[in-house]
View (tube, rainbow, N blue to C red):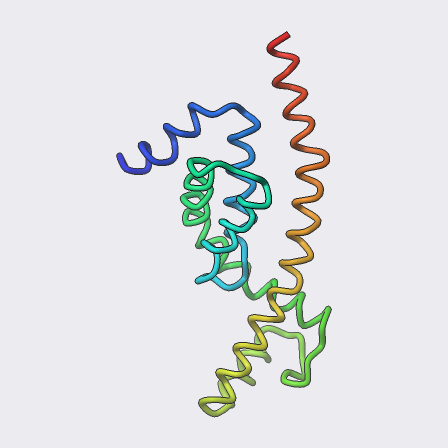
Length: 154
């Protein structure tokens, strides 16, 4: 718990409100990537997109790790949305339970291929969500927060 306070809470307290919200936005958005092992890299990519410093990126990666259970819980939703948006020839349904039954019936390498298709299907809606979220955050939310900080100074 002490490490968490030293590496996340303390740096967040030293930051301006706009910088702290940048960290939280990057950590949450990158942490929701439907491929759980790729969330750190996506968080770093989002941090780069938002032009965060190294310290801010470190806080974003720590927050990314904290939302891993939420990420794992949302993977089926992203896969389901991806199957609706981009129907593939591998699966003939968009029902999560039927998808799992179809996966269980496949042999070794075919199931690995099918899991790869599921990962790509899950990434499609996440990429759309990410693009929209970054656009809304940078054009609307960040400007509102920055205006609020300036009005406190004046």
